[in-house]
Image (spheres, rainbow, N blue to C red):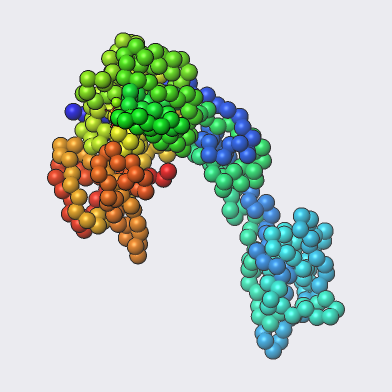
Length: 408
Ligand code: AMP
Ligand code: MG
C-alpha cells in the first residue's frame, strides 16, 4: 500500500503540470482579500517617505539642547507649527523649535522631537527643555521601514487585511490574483437525501457536500456544482461526465470502498480516467482514490465524514494550493504532548481529532471523545488532527506527538 507521502507526491506531480495554465483575475483591492497574489510587489517608495515624528511635541536641533538640566533649562523660540499633510516651509535653526504632530514630516534643520508631556510651553510660545535631547529621538528616519527596490510581498502569498493595507500604501488599486480552481462535488450513496428532506428509515441527510463546500472555499477554490447521486452505475457515470465538463477538480464522496455498491472506480474507468492510486496506508481514509482525465483532477474520498476531512486535508488542499500557485501548501504541523493514551491503527498511520491547547508555552493535544470515522458530531470541535505513527499500536499519555493544525 502507498504511504501518505508517496500518494501526496503523485498528487503533486500531477497537479504541478497544471500550474502554467492557471488563470489570473484582475481584482480591485477590496475584492482581492483572501486571494493569492500572482506578482511580487517591489517597493517603489521609501517608507516612511520622510523623517517622521513618532510623538506629538516639538522638533528642533538636538544641538540646541546641549547642557540643558533641571536648573539650567534651554529655551527655544517657537517658530511655527506643522499641520498634518504639509511640510514646514522653512528651516529650523539653532535655538528654534516647531510644534509637530505624530506622523508629520520633521522639518529641515531639525533632527529630534521631544514629546509634549516633558516640555514647558511659555506664554510667548517659546519652550523650555530641562534635559539634553539626543539626535534622532522620536524620529523614524526616511526609508527606515522599507527601502526602494525591496521585495515587499512575494508571488503566491495570500492577501490578508494587513497585506491589503500594504498594497494600498504602494498604490495598487487592482491586483492580479490566481483564478479560483473550479471544483465540482458529487456525493454518492442511495441512502442520502438532501438537507431539506426528511430521511425515511435507512436514509440519512447528505452532510459531506457542506463540509467539502467549506473546505474548498477556505482552500481558495470555488464550488461550481454539487449534486447527489444514487449508487447506480449509469447515474454515476452521467454525473461524473457532466461534472467534469464544468470543473477543473472533481471531488466525489463515498462509493470507493469494497462494498457491492461502490461504483466510483468502475465509473471513472469507463470514462477513460486514469486511476493513479486507490488505497493509502492511512486511517481513516484508506480507500482514497486519485485519478485524472486529461487536465482534470479527480479525488474519490471515502464517504465517512471524518475520512472526508482527513483525505481533503492531506491530498486535496495541497493540490488546490498548488493550482493557485500558493506559497504555503504544506499543512501546519507542530508537536504536542498527548494528554491521554490513544490507540493507533498499524500498519496505517492514524489521524485522530483533538483539541490543541497551549499551557504556559507548552502545546498539549487532548484527544476528543469520538466513536470513529462516522462520528461527525464528535469531530466537529476538533482544531487539530494528531498523528499516531504507522508502527505504533498505542501512544501513551505524556508522549510528544505530531499534530496537524486545522484552521477551519
Ligand atoms: P461509503 O464510503 O460510501 O461506503 O460511505 C461510508 C459511510 O459514510 C456510510 O455510513 C455513509 O452513509 C456515510 N456517508 C457517505 N456519504 C455521505 C454523505 N454525503 N453525507 C453523510 N454521510 C455519508
Ligand atoms: Mg456509499
